Amino acid sequence: MRLRRRARSLSPFYISAATLLATALFVTAGCGYHTAGHSVQLPENVKTIAIPAFENHTTTYHIEQTLTASVIREFTTRTHYHLLNETGEAADATLRGTVLATSASPLTYNASTGQAASVLVVVSMSVSLTDRQGKVLYQNPAYLFREQYEVSQDLASFFEEDSPAYRRLSQDFARTLVSNILEGF
Image 1 (cartoon, rainbow, N blue to C red):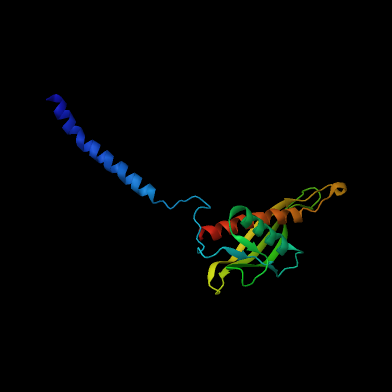
Image 2 (cartoon, rainbow, N blue to C red):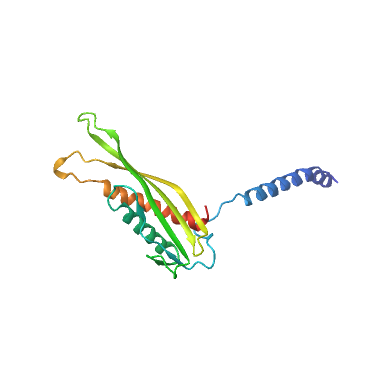
């Protein structure tokens, strides 16, 4: 008899604990997280993507080539799409980019010399992916990427670091762009 009474008195506790556990599982199951790269949002008929050289509306030499090459490399390594460098009838979609602005500004200064110790480079871009009919599949008119580099204070071993900074920035941009296109953000 004692066991029965104890079991009956604990049963509401077990029911509320089970209800709480089921509620927690239900709430966390719909949190919206997914594994990157597994949620391709492009239409199934897109098999070939043309990526012509990005346009450069700045005075920064060859920045468009660096950005275009990084995007092509990222698409090649992460996706199964066939890539073309020219637009035309063969492409199911076309990815166009425009470098809108670039800037390089001193970020920190050497206290003893007053010279710049580090520089921040900023690149602003616009990108759109359209299908054959001109329908926009993905668009972001306001990409903004930053990269910092240290300025060498030794004139004998001086090496201009802006080109490597632009390469690092272009790699970050390419990773972000391809992820955004594949995941539909």
